[in-house]
Length: 230
Image 1 (cartoon, helix red, strand yellow):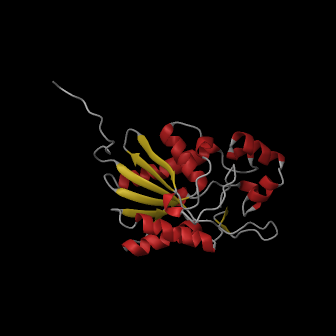
Image 2 (cartoon, one colour):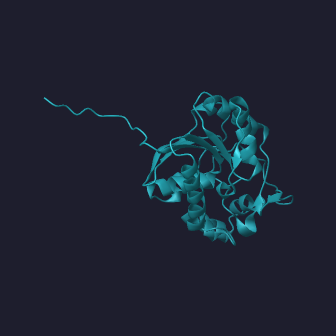
Image 3 (cartoon, one colour):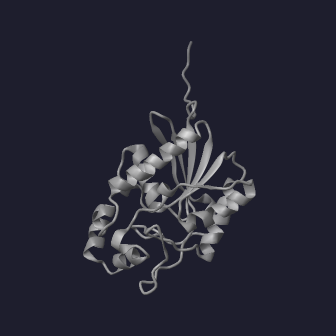
């Protein structure tokens, strides 16, 4: 008699397995001394804790078969990728369109200050998780289009491979929302140094895991209810 056991997920032929890693903790914002800007985006360095989180990521992923590394154009992703890149002997490629959400008038660390002081636009952002509530910022739709197109391009160049991308909290939320046809607010609060798994095909995306932080025991910091870029 025929039987039909449950089976485990298997990536379809030609699929690209993508591991997203959020960068480590960055420097605290000081409204009197803005972060340096790169292409208009705040560009802080990792803290000592952030560097430790980056080492933990390298330790976690170094034994996996990895066919390529990608970073955004912002320094915190380069710094987070460095331990893994050194361990596996690969040089990351830079994908500018995987950079964090553009915060318009509140770039350079000012966004964190505005959230704390409960500026009306910050209150609206907390209510809706719509980045376009911030004066001059990208909208959720713009962020999702930019970042998903970047990942589609990576898939086209790496079909059948495993790629690790070092990115940002807002980017992770946008890509996970795109994969699930869900809302970005459902993917708020990715931990610094956390791991997220996607499988991409030409027809659809699969979200396989979100916010895997098991490698970060001892390197965690409390997360805000609404996490902040940079």
